[in-house]
Image (cartoon, rainbow over all chains, first blue to last red; front, side):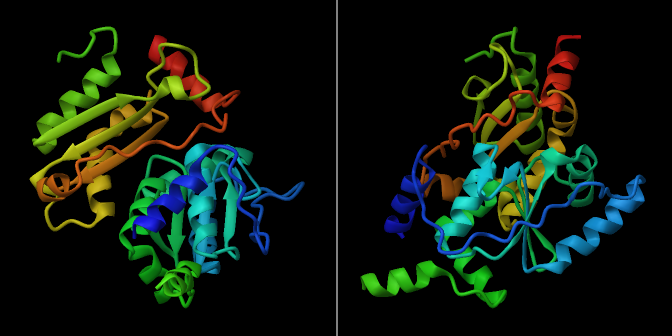
Length: 157
Length: 122
């Protein structure tokens, strides 16, 4: 477990380079000309669908290739450490209605926000603690995702 | 240590968490200086709350308790809130404050942060 924490610390250091074997699949909420429905109901309906469409969904500032916030970056790095590259990410900085909408939808005041199988998991703090205490490996397992750290730990034994 | 009266948000956070969660240990850190916001801001905080009220609660419920306690501040002045919510036993086992990741400048030019700053000044 200590090696996981040290690896996390290395990962979160500014300028640390973590090479991705496969780019995370970034689904942009907005393509040019595309907008969410204007009403709050519209956003809520869209979000209810969005969080269920993919196993792992992240609402963040920026995108996985260029996070615009240290906390959002931490989520990206943690998922990356576990080999989770194929997830949907949504950049709340691109749409203030999305930014407020997701806070209302989750009843959670801050960004980033992480969903597993349509269920709200939490923000950066919770994901980090799940990573440190081993719960994240278990939760990914439930999603049918084998964490890369399981293989790493096995190899080191 | 009495909080500086010139830091009203920090004081409000401390008071509300104390009154609601009756913590054994409480730390409230203003981390605004670590972010791209004007000096003297009260926009980014880290709180460490050690309370027996967290016994038996999963992390998300603990965080929701803290969020609910500080909902007025989160709606108005506070842009980011990092939370550590531990039971007394967990704190005794590992009495460490987590560190926030380095800022990546997202608050620079962020209208919502600027609006909150303005609301704070008014």
